[in-house]
Length: 217
Image (cartoon, one colour):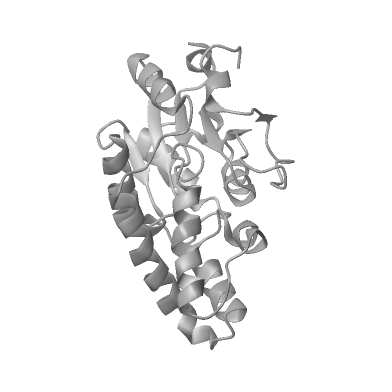
């Protein structure tokens, strides 16, 4: 497999990259805003997609015209709504299952997951997608002091995989995720879902994970 000849580890983002979960986040955040008397928009989605819960908490509070200290409670409310969505099941992105499987079959290459979501959400999501036991290392926002776009999540993922960041490839779909991977010293391939996503820091941009199954990387 081409990826295995160049890297000692491949680290996947989860939401939007590995899992087709952005619609679920949309529904959860839409319901949150409805409960608090407002409407969730595409512009709102772009503003928080891929960011940390701390940044999202501040955004929610400001957007819903509530005190800043209410932001954490709003995020917690949204997280419970998201868990309900995930328990109903979540689909993988095209090519995701085959790419993970083929990487697992290659000797000497680690497969990791680096997600800005909390561990409870990651566990529910991976269980729903049938990917509970496929990663050599899983790092979530619960494991680090600073989530993406800080490099902490990717640095810890590489440490747990036993590779130098320069030997690892990150697969990301958001600007904060790409920034985190590059700040940590990884190569990064972007697989953006939306044309508005800033992918200028990525080393390469592809339209789907399926492109990585056979093309020279």
